[in-house]
Image (cartoon, rainbow, N blue to C red):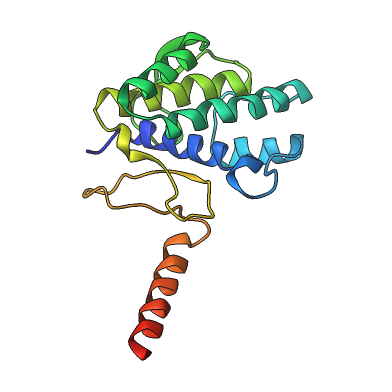
Amino acid sequence: MTFSHDVEHSLGVVVDLVNSDPESGGGEQLPDLAALRAFVDNHRISDVNTLTEADLRAVHALRPRLRAVFRADGTAAAAALVNELLRDATMCPRLTDHDGYDWHIHYFAPGSAPADHLLTDGGMALSFVVVAGEHERLQVCSAPDCRRVLVDLSRNRSKRYCDSRTCGNRLHVAAYRERQRAAAV
């Protein structure tokens, strides 16, 4: 299952936003307005102008709500959580072609606050995953000491570890060393 470019982009933004939370096991990745501005710019989030402390607080408050979708136990639970997100979204669907991408749909209202933009775009991207019957692609890293989230977009649904902390490699090396120790006994 492949999703459109804009859905995959929005899912990537959701993952990075959720993983910016200290709940993911690291420090706060969005501690101030400068970090939020960098996040907005690096993820090419369009139509975001001035940022305020209220924007930062609202983005911080959104992260646990998005994380809950990844932790949902089954499709019905994920759908209920996505519906809660979308209930609070200000929708203004419109076609756009920008930044070298062909026509696609933006769901957020022009000029909306960053948290509203992230809520609407992220909520819609998550809804497409749930509607496609692909909720199991929304995961928490399988490393026992990691709480980061990921979206498994692989064909065979084999991705189990987050990308940023080499969790899979670390666990594979540990398993190999354990097999070596067991063979030496």
